[in-house]
Structures are given as structure tokens and as C-alpha cells.
Amino acid sequence: MTLAETPAQAPPEEPRPAAPGRGRAWARLAAGLIPPLILLGVWQLVAASGAYSTAQLPPPADVAAGLGELIERGELWRHIAISVQRVLLGYAAGAACGLALGALVGLSAPARALLAPTVQALRTVPSLAWVPLLLLWMGIGEAPKQTLVAIGAFFPVYTTTAAALAHVDPQLVELGRAYGLRGVGLLTKVLLPAAAPSVVNGLRLGLAQGWLFLVAAELIASSMGLGFVLIDSQNTGRTDLMLLAIALLALLGKTSDAALGLLERRVVRGRT
Image (tube, rainbow, N blue to C red; front, side):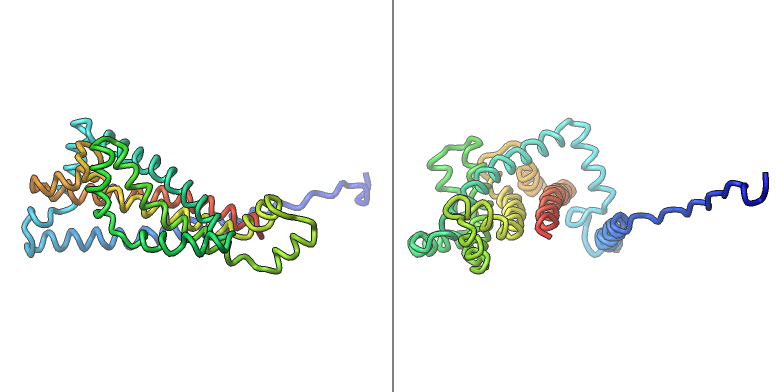
């Protein structure tokens, strides 16, 4: 075999670079962990300084011990489960009503003139102001708690949906009509896709508001839930459990918001 007949050797494969998107995601995650770690360190330093008693500010180790105590008694998962259930059921009802009414107000000028002022006035009512009324109407079961969470979730979803649909680019609407779209077809193929990012953002705000209203909801004759742990620990002087409940509420709220954040990114990516 001559040199010319010698088969050429394939060049060595170069290592593939890591996906840039994954690297950025890990960088964002690492950056997001810095403030909680700093806060944890400052908390430990202040607690150890003696400026506050352990009854006022227990160190992080005491809060971790309180977490272990609730796990040993089998109460932690029950409290978390009932709170998550209340938020999800209330949020689903409130978000559905917010989407429906927001679409009506956003798409109809007469409905906007008739309903928007009243809804905006009700939006300013504090969460605790609803509690006695819901107790009077619904008793002390689960219904008033879920209803209060639904009220909290309703207003951000309604506001963003109405504003997004009312301010869709008129040129898009005219383009849709030029292609013969009317009514439901115009709504589903032009208006809703154009408003989708703002609507999903409103859903995220509504979920966050639902968690905020949860503590007020669990003021209503509750014996379980993280809001109950928060209130009961105040009555019993267990500041460690109070801080634990706050941390768990923050963690659950962030986790649920991150799940909707993934949906928002998919919606935005689908429009580009």
C-alpha cells in the first residue's frame, strides 16, 4: 500500500463546551444563595452577641432544633400539607375568577366602565377586614380560609389580565381582522397570545398574594397549618417555631413562584 492509499486518520474530537444556558443557571442559583447565607451569618452573630435574649432572637441552631421537634412529633408535614392545600385550592378559584372578569373588563369598554371602579375599590380592603365577614357567612371550616386566599389571589390576576388585554397593540388587532378573524378566533389567536406574558406574570403575583393572605386565613379558628404555627408560637413564647414558620412560608412561596416562573419563560420563549 502506497502512502497515497493510506486511509486518512480522523482528527481527534474536540471536547464539547458546556451549554452556556446551564452555566448561567448555576451562576444565578449560586448568586441567589449569597444573601440568605449572609443573613444566616448576621443572625448567628447578633444572637451570639447578647444584644437580645434567646427568647427574643434564638440562634439558628435552636430553630433547627425546633424543626427536628416538629418532625419527631409528626406535625411538620401535616402543617405544610394543609397550608399548601389551602393555598392551591384558594388560588385556583381566585385565579379563575380573576382571569374571567379581567378578560371581560379588558375586552369590553362598557364592562370596564361599569365594573372597574367597584373592583378597584374592593382591592384596597385589607385582608383582615374580610375575616369577620367570612366567619359570619361561612362558619369556621375550610371554606372561609380558602375563600380568603382566593380573594388575595383574585386581584393581581384580574388587574394584569384586564390591563394586558385592554392595551394589546391595535395594529395586531387590525392585522387579525384583515385575515378575517372575529370574536373567539380573534381572542384566541391574537389577543390572548399577545397578552400571555403579562397574564402569566399576574398569575405569579396572585400566587404570592395567596401566600400572604394565608396567615390571615389561618387566623380563622385553625388548629393546623403554618399560619397556625406562627400564631400559636407567639402565644406560647416559642420564637424558634415562629422563625421556623416564617422560613417555611418563604421557602414554599419561592418554590411555587419558581414553578410559575418556568411557565412564564416558556410562554415568552414561545412568542419569540
